[in-house]
Amino acid sequence: MTMPFRLSAVAGLILLGAMANAGAETTTDRYGKELKIEPSHNIFARFGLLGLKMNNKSEAAKDVSGAVLSAGQRGRYCPVDPGDPRLFPLCSEADSDTIYGTGVQTTLFGIPGTPSDTQTDILGLPDNVKAKFADPAPGAIGTLGMYLDEDHHWAVEVPVMALPFSVDVYGAGSFEKAGKIITAKALGFLVFGHYYFGKKADKFRPSVSLTANYLVPFDEEATSSLVRWTGGRTKVSSKGSLGLGWLVGGKYAIDDRWDLNFSFGQFNAKVESTLTTYDTILNGRSVAAGGSPIFEYWPGVLGDNIRRLRRSGFLYSQLEGMIAYRNSDPANRVNGGANLGTFTRTQKQTIDPYVLMMTVGYNF
Image 1 (cartoon, rainbow, N blue to C red):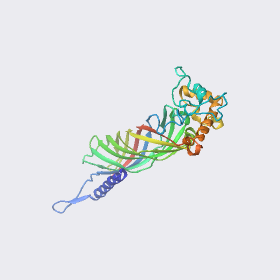
Image 2: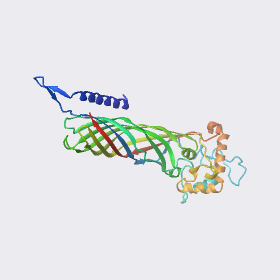
Image 3: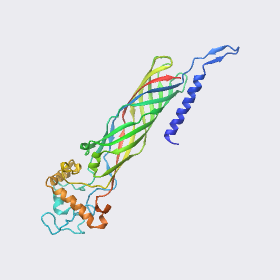
Image 4: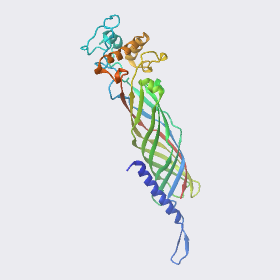
């Protein structure tokens, strides 16, 4: 049984209870005299707005399929014209540690043991690639609930109508300059358990609540900015997530039927996203000339070395040489040698937004 079906079943039981409750208005005593029964109003419906203040903790993205270009067969470079000693020394299939030739390796990675040595792959995923969520606009919510005792201390409540939130995701860490990288929608299936203090007849009753929520992301799309940074068409998908939360608030009785409700608290969810980039092409030219922006903002010493090569125009020739090398050997070709292939990365997020809910309630 799926989570939405369970919530629908709970809502249906509450609605049946409301119909039964609405009809129980009078009774008769043993002599046949009609007696009016004060309704218990155990069933309620609420409608209002739900707002979120996003607060997420992003783990660094991880390569699943390996670095785009790295040491060994994937990243070795032998010049198209090995007889030109001005830029490239000679290299052979046996030179498994040679990355773009010895001269380029020294320029890019530095000499082992010196402060400029990075000892890392040339074009793996940079360290500290993270993401952050923008605050979505408030969304409408409608709920049905039931008090579980005659004093209206305990209650359970479920949404029966909610509009999905539109969510914008921005780059952070090494991807901060990428701006908006993903657009998505999210819908949360919630169950509230409330406890109300005070007496049933009190005008104002404070409350505490616990929630169980199931977050469902959908309609996720990579922006054109993310495509430029990853080097190819990128597909984004995320798993649904079960989480818990808490609320504090209260309700103010306008009369025996209508009340105003507010709650403030925090929900929790964990989201794991998978980003798959197809037909990856990385261009070493400047951004103004249509080059890949990731080179402009690569962090650390390796980034400084990449930008040094880029300013000299050297990096562009190396990337062109990389593709030429892969085209020359059928064992290393990807998609006929037209691009560097398909790469998959994953990223985990802990999302614990602050929540404000304000509703108008009607007691049946």
